Image (cartoon, rainbow, N blue to C red; front, side, top):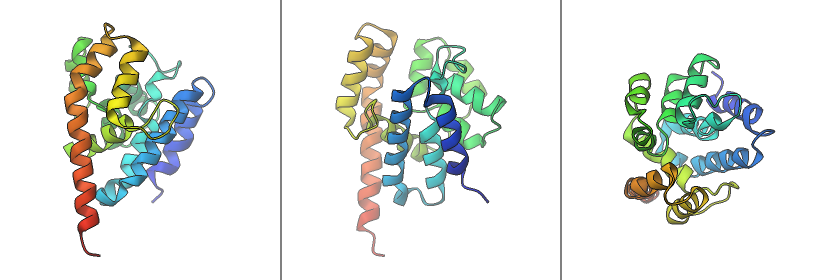
Length: 188
């Protein structure tokens, strides 16, 4: 059976590389972070990496319908690309999307269409996203949150959402790092 990543990378590249090259670099970096935590994901490592490279496709000009990129990306994956349901759900709910959806008055819509995956997978994707700069390099969640708030402005919907989500983003990161540390302590 072909790996999800073999399908996901070309799709994400086709949607992002030309119109949004910086966003494409970010997605590649997020996928790279996913590979660094594969040891705690077992059979879901490929799933996480596929969702990581696809997580921001909703920003693509041809896909942006509602202006809420997790929902736009997930709908495209479901309605057009025929993606794996678990990938779709991870994209829909990445990085505390429910909080942004709530701020936009879209939470019921998001949660009504797309169920959440396991907390472990949602944590892992949030960890990968929030430890990657817009240019795809490694960072930490505090700097990433500050960068997002600075880019959008503290009074913007995104600026307010990211500050509201900060405790959960930090908790996700902590839980992932704890799982990685525990896995590294396990005897082979």
